[in-house]
Amino acid sequence: MVPTASREEKQTEILIAAIRVFAKHGFDGAKMEYIAKEAGIGKGTVYEYFESKDRLFEEILKFSVEQFRIGLKESMDKGETIEQKIMNCSRFTAQFMNDHMEFVHIAMQVKILSEDIRLHHMAVQSVIIEYYKEMVKAAKQKGELRSNLDVELATCCIIGTLEQFCKQRVFIDPRPIGEIDHPAIVDVILRGLR
Image (cartoon, rainbow, N blue to C red):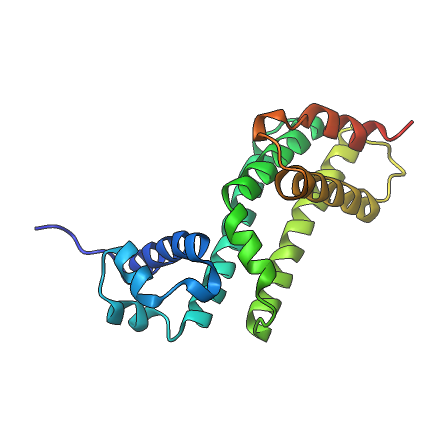
């Protein structure tokens, strides 16, 4: 007998199938029957998990933001030094954006998001900011960063640089992901512009 997927596993399967469908057809072109077919289930089953296409899309946004948070933390934790940690975060951010490019474009086109999704996004962003703050604090304690460095300002500089540069290279001026010079990004972050 083949074991059946738990409700959470089935929901995740639907979310992953829906990401592919939204990426292929756009928000307006994506139909629940396409999502059901991609997930290998009946259309009614999709509605058992998600009451509408809008709700499904919002759940995809939550799911994607959570996947980014988890992956970023794992990448950060693999580094021993501040330089390695930032390098890992840079690589992860660029790869994540590249892998989810079509979906990010769709998300930017959807104007109306519920209060729930906005609050969720802000909460996850706050957790991510705390990850970076802890990384900066630890680097200060280890003597890798100067002792008088403002943790909040340093955190914003790191996050802003990584996110904006990766957006530039993945969305605005697309180049092969392998051409992103992560050591140069780390150098500018850690050594500044002089």
